[in-house]
Length: 92
Image (cartoon, rainbow, N blue to C red; front, side, top):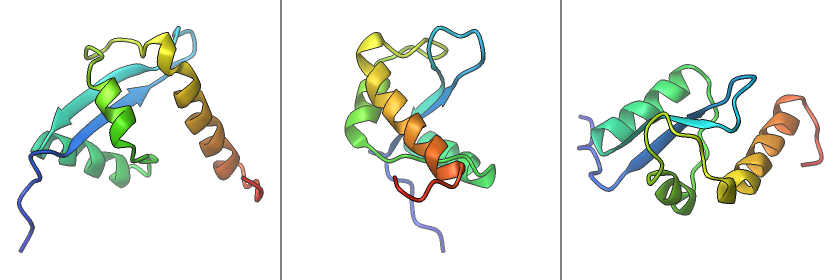
């Protein structure tokens, strides 16, 4: 039996395309929607980073809106870490 959705669960999906000024929020939601965002990411082998604080800040960004400059460094650090991990660097 599957567990009921956590109504407090939140999730954000970001996308970045060449030419974009900054990553954009392409999906966000709570409860069942959040669980679907996370499940879809995992099904497609997309990295899922868990940070309640960062998600809370990103939930304030409009859907299809760019992340604010105040979050550039935090997102850049996560992306740099992920790039090193995916490229096989052992010292992270």
